[in-house]
Image 1 (cartoon, rainbow, N blue to C red):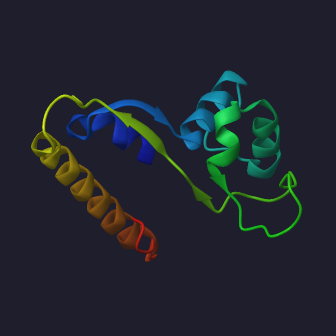
Image 2 (image 1 turned 90 degrees about the horizontal axis):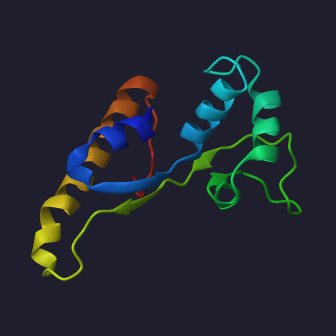
Amino acid sequence: QLCERMQAAKELKIQSLHCWPLDFRNWLLDQKRPFPSKKFRRDFKLFRQHAPNWMAGDVGFDYQGELPVPNNILPTWIIVEAKLEVDSHQSGRHLKPVMQAWEDFLANERERIRRIKGASLGSFF
């Protein structure tokens, strides 16, 4: 849902978005499997075999062993990559509202997750 909220927030000026949970959902639905997955380990293992190449670096694993990461290891964090619609020929001042929109969005997400899970997302979020 994070990816969908990001796409819906027009003030973030997102031109394109790489977000593997969204791709995972779409892949499951294309495979006529339920989302959320009722058999996450199996489905995630299959998805990784068919995932786009960019996804390999965007799934975080708490794993210190040899690479590649074994298929039985579950993701523990994600990287979301977004390209923004900005005019590179204007001064940096026009970016201030976009930067503030991102700060506000991330603050709201952090608070939403804390309310739901009681978790801390660390300083990066």
